[in-house]
Each structure stands twice: as C-alpha cells, then as structure tokens.
Length: 401
Image (tube, rainbow, N blue to C red; front, side, top):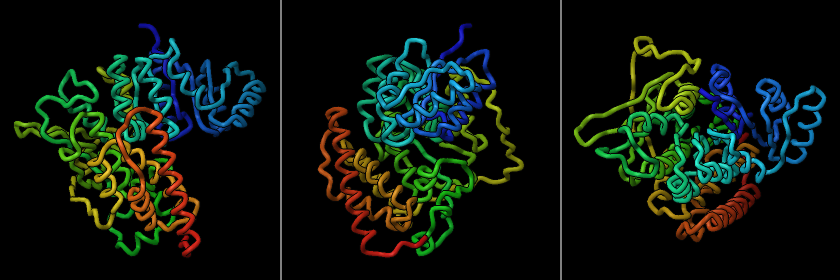
C-alpha cells in the first residue's frame, strides 16, 4: 500500500497537534506532505524537524521568514510559504490525499473550500466553514466527489452512527432526529450573576476538554453548541428543527442519532480528540489512536439535562440564525469572533458577549448565500458592526477582570 499524503492546516493548534500525534503512530501508512499555521514559529520548527514535510506555510509573512531562517540553521530542507493563498494552495496539491482543516475561525474558510473543490478527503475541524458558507462547501464536495468527514467529536459521532453510503449534505435515510451533546462548559452550575462576571481564565478552564481559548469561551457561552447545530444541519442535510441539544456533563456520549423505528444509536469514547481524528484518517476501517479506553464501570453514570437558553442566550441567537439561514450564520459567526476576542482582551465582561451578538444580528442585512463574495461581505459587515458595539460598551462601562 502506498503512503497517504496528508496536509495538516492549523498544525500548531490543539487539533493539529493531536492529528500529528495520531499520524506519528502510523508512519508506515501516512506521509506528512505539508504543515500550515498562523504564527507559532517555535512549535512549527519542532514539527518540521519531527515530520520533515516538503512544505510549511505560515499565515504571517514575518513568521514565515523567521521559520525559514531557523529551518536552514538546523539543516531542515522543508520549503516555506507565506500567506492565506499559499495555505489554500497546499490543500490542492496532487500529492495530497487528505486535508486536515483545523485552522480556527473565518481564516480557515478558503483552504477548506479549496480542499473540497480539489476532491480531497476533507477532515473538517473548522466548523466555521460549514457555519459561514455551508451551501458553498457542500456544493464543492458534491461537484468534486470529495469525502467530507467531520472532526468535531459531536459531528464525528453522528457520522459514525449513520447508515452506510451516507453523503454529506444529504438527509440520511430513516433518521428522525439528531441529538448533539454539550458538556455544559465550566459554568454549568454557576448562577447567572456569577457567570456574567466570569474572567477569561475561568471561561477557558474547561472541565473535560483541552481546547484553544476561542472555542473554550464558546463552550462556556454555549455558542459552540449553537454553531455545531448549524454545522450539523449543513453536513447532514437536516433542518435545525430536527436537531436537539442535551447537556451531558460526563462528555462520554458524543452524540446520538434517532431513527424512525425508535432506535437510538450513540457513539461513546473517552473525551479525547484523537478518537475522531483516527476514525476519520482510517475510515472506513479503524486504527489505534493512542487514547485511554472507556471504562463504563468506572464512569458509573451518564446524566442528561436540558440546556437553559435564558442563562446562556448565545444558544438562542444561534438557533435563530439557523432558522433564518442564508448569510445570517456568517454574520453570527463574525459577531461572535469579535465579541469573544474582546472578552479575552479584557475589553468586555463575559455577560456582554451575547449582548454584542444580539445587537449585531439586529442590524445586519442578511440575504441569500449567492457566493463566496457575499459570504465575505456579510462577514466583514458583521465584524465592523461588532467592533463598533464593543467600542461603545468599552467606553461606557467598567470591565471586571
């Protein structure tokens, strides 16, 4: 069997590092062709020395120059590229079979679309691609014959529970309902008053998962689950009204699929991102992920609760955007990115995040998703509005840090 060529986009992030850990277990099967990241030169240097990819790309020009200099100093022959266009180009190279799309936020959209259009196996960890431009992504997959396998633990769990032959964007046969599970984040049992005053450190202290700061805050607001609802609707071709969310604090049941005959299939595993990564790399087969196996006796119990949209209004905003469709989801994602970054920069209180998003969503123009240009325009409009709202709030109140 010839080696499978893999590109890891976002290699220095949490998903990217976990992907490389899995690939390291199976060097006889996979070859790392290229790595891409934003600006973490130190970690990218270590990854290039470990895997010796043909290419490495940095979004930052300055970071690319620093990386190239350091690679030459240690005698590593990896060639260095710079910029978003170069990263997207790596996803289309002929020697590439699989693309791990793990660049977070809107910055990962172009490269994910490029991989889909090039007919690659797209391991989608960048949920924003489906949220912002779901119709465009599915259209690219269907035109090119690409394989799209979701990496988010919830969507990968659903993928594993669907009938054989499922195709992305097409409603699966016999399925009545999808059920996404949410951990509830670090503030599940906090009062609304305490939640509103939470600090960035508290919001990023997830009780179950080790994630980046942005997604950790989204988990704390439950916006992450709202974005996942939109993503599930896109990937599995089902309306948002047929997708439910339950809070499951143990994070062992990653999602469930309810069938018309009353059967409910669930995927369980330890809360470790290497499980869905290994599943997507090996599909339709299985291979070792290097994780701890699930011990149900030690786990002892599985709890499920209804989410509280009053305490976590971001979930309600996401559900409304899913109902509206079109460009509303791109606007929602952009407003959330700006608000979360402002919170992490200690410009906003945690309780202000949903207020910023609500203000933006009440002012954006919306409309149909006619193409990538329209998506990027909606994204830019929402970012400008969100930045304006943040500036007004920052000027008019104190921030608790």
